[in-house]
Image (cartoon, rainbow, N blue to C red):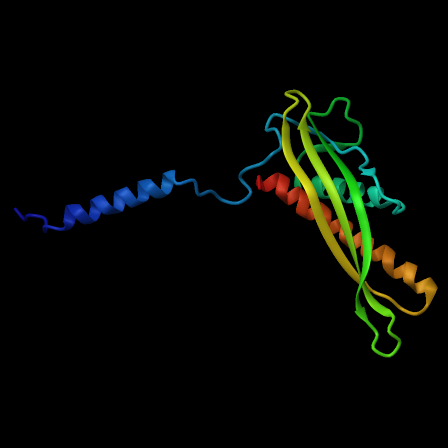
Length: 179
């Protein structure tokens, strides 16, 4: 009968201890956690509040968030809170535009950055517990400015649309990934 070598048990003991430790250390695959209630089926996303002077920014953000939840979850998304399992409320607290690049010939701004500050809360309607809170969220998008006044507004609006899509994708990822 052949005897196992001296380090055999030590090597396997170490392997099992390491495997057990890794299983218990809390590693998980991204996307497994969620702030959304598991038993819920309906998510209400009422129109965000606009505490700024920027026209329709709350509509763009709300619509983008709704589209993102519809495309990435199995929840039925509605605007009214009645009958919903969870409610996502948001408010736009600040919108600013700042020049970041200047034309050296004219000294006028050639690129502008839009910055939006927002607060968001996800509330479980049954338990009244806050499931997710995003306070002081900041999103930025830049766009180029032309000297033609009519083109300025045509460039600004698509920049707000891009910012709304980025805001929605980031927010929904934060809610779904449990970060």
